[in-house]
Image 1 (tube, rainbow, N blue to C red):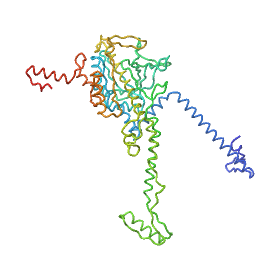
Image 2 (cartoon, helix red, strand yellow):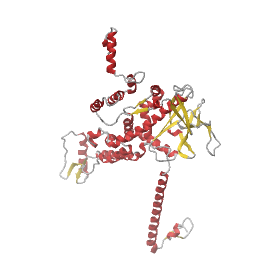
Image 3 (cartoon, rainbow, N blue to C red):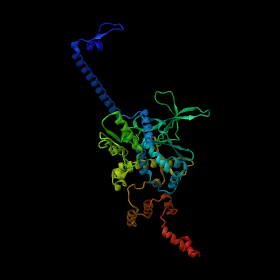
Image 4 (cartoon, rainbow, N blue to C red):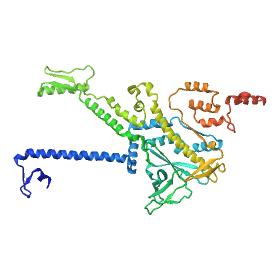
Length: 517
C-alpha cells in the first residue's frame, strides 16, 4: 500500500488527465495523519543523530584514519597562514619554547666536542638545531601534531645527517605483533622524479631509531601481500608527536581544537563590519507629509548634505523636517566576540591578552607582560618534549661514533644487545651525560637574578656559577664561552686570576703587563 493510499487519496483514472478527490469529511483525519507522519520523521531523524553521536563516541576510542589526519593537517596549515588568531597563537608558542635558545653540553670533553660539532654543522642547523629549524618544527607540531626526523647515517664514519620527512609521506607504522605500542618500522610513500621527468612512486620502510634486531632483513613484505619493499636501515626515524591519546600512533596538532572558535571569531567580526558599514550608509531621514512637490524639495535638500561643511543648514517647511537616524540600540559591540577569542587562547594554551595583542582593552599591562603559572608550565612541558627529542637524537649520534669502524669514539666503548636493541656503553659512561638547558621563561629581572647568584657564590661550583650568570645575562653561545673557562683537564680557570697571572708573567719577561690584561 502506497503512501497516497494510506493517506486516503483515491485515484479515479490512470490516464494523464486523471484527477484526485478527497472526501470533505476526511480533511481533519488527513491533517492528523500528516502530523503523525511528521512526528515519525522527526523521531527517525533524531534517532539517526543519536546513532551518529554513538558512532562518533566509538570512533573517538580509536585513532583517526590516515585521510582524516591528512585533511586535519591541511586545514590547520591553511589557518596557520590565513587566520590571524591561529597564526599569532602558534608563533607565540614557538617563541615561548625556543625564543631564548637552548643550550646543550656533555660531561666528557671528547663527547662534548662531538656534540658541539654536530649541532654546529650547517646541515644539522638547517633541519634541527638552528633557530629557523626550531621554530619551523614547533609550528609543525602546532599544525600536524607530528614531526618525523630521518637520521641518515654513514655506516663507515658514523656521521649522521637529519632530514624531516613530510607528514603525508608516512602512511603506516608497523608494530611488534605482541605489542601494539612498540613501533618497528615506518612506511614511507613518496614520488621521485626520474631522468625523463616522470614521477615514480617509491615505497620504503624505515626502522625506528632504536630498533636494531640481530638479523636485519633487506626487504619487508606485509602480511597477505606479494609485494616487498626495501628497508632503509641507515635512515632510522625518530618520531615526535603531541596531543596523542593512549594507544594512538600519531599526534594531533595544537590548532585542531582552536579552529572552530577561530572561524567563529572571524565570522563575528565580518558580520560586525557589515553592520557598521550598513549603519553608515543612511545618516538622515525626512519626516513629514507626502506629496510630489514636498518630496522633490526634500530630495534637493538631502542632495546638498554630502557636500556641506560643518555648521551648514537646510530649508524645511512646517510639515517637513530632517533628522539624523538614531543609532541607539542599533550598534554591535565588537568586544562581544572576546569569549570566542578566549576559547582559541584556551585551545592553544596561551593567555587571551597575548593572543589579541591588546592588553589595554583586555587586561592590565602587568598581566599582559607576564605568564601565569599554568601557561608557564604548559610551555615548559613542550620544552620537555623537545629536550627528550634532542637527548635521544644526540644519544644516537654518540652511539654511531662508537659503532662505526671509523667513528670518532671507536674503541672507547662497547655494545651490548638487549633483545632487538643495541645499547652502547662508553668506558666512562658519565662522559655522555647531557645537560640540555632552556632559559627560564618566567619574567625575572636581571638585577634580582644577579643578586641571588652573588649570594650563592661560594656555595655552588664556580663553573656552574659562571654558566648561570651568562644565562641570566642572555649571553649567546654559552657552551663555547664555558669551554674558554676550562683547561685541558676540564678544571675551571678563574678569568680574573688568570689575567693577573698573565700580567705577572709578562712583567717577569720584561714585557708590558697591560697588553696581557
